[in-house]
Image 1 (tube, rainbow, N blue to C red):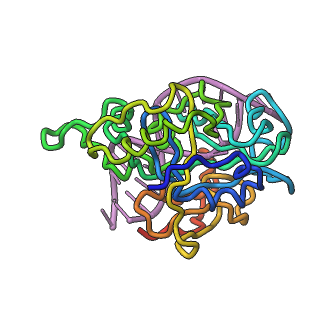
Image 2 (image 1 turned 45 degrees about the horizontal axis):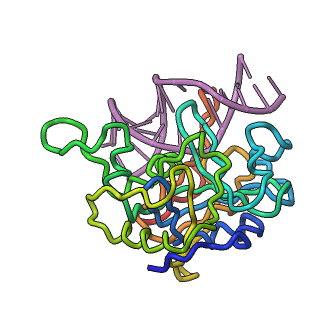
Length: 252
DNA sequence: CGGATGATTCTCT
DNA sequence: GAGAATCATCCGC
């Protein structure tokens, strides 16, 4: 497992170039390591109407206009957090939404963050969350990594001592049910090289759950990976119009 | 498996 | 005041 940190220059590109390159990389935060399998690009030059930055800088999206390599964490639907990695130089308003991944380290810790779930099956109680569902979707992924509002703006480019890297290897190689040790200082994150998939294994398509720019194929995923989230077309809230299904879900 | 629905609060119009 | 880069659960097939 390659665990060298990605340099800041990696993020100094348009988000639709960074997003496919992020697949297979490792995101480490809060004692959990995730191998990214799905990502979406937003914003940047050329005005993306689906991006939070489309209508200019606000208190909410300020981090997206900041330096690349930082986490943009936002709150949505009244209960969920989603995490992005900022791209391009400052003031461009571009980022990659981390949509799904496989938890490869700290599985027990990731499961414990899913609101008391994880009880043994067979007694009529809730079944434990399957390993592949721990990071299947942007809000679930944020939960697994322990990312909250307070982590908005955190720098995910590692510039600390190299001695911390072997600790990540130990985290990943730990027993599947063992809680991962907090190998990084609380509140900091890091993106590591991981093992990028073969170019032919990367697929792209329209982004999920948005009402505009449906024809921009800026969603990228690892073909056939079981941790990729199901595609969902945007469903308008409680209106009289009936919706028709559009797009296709990845095979798995 | 696919569609419908409620939860719950923040943000910008 | 509407709508949101979502999720878990219920229902019907």
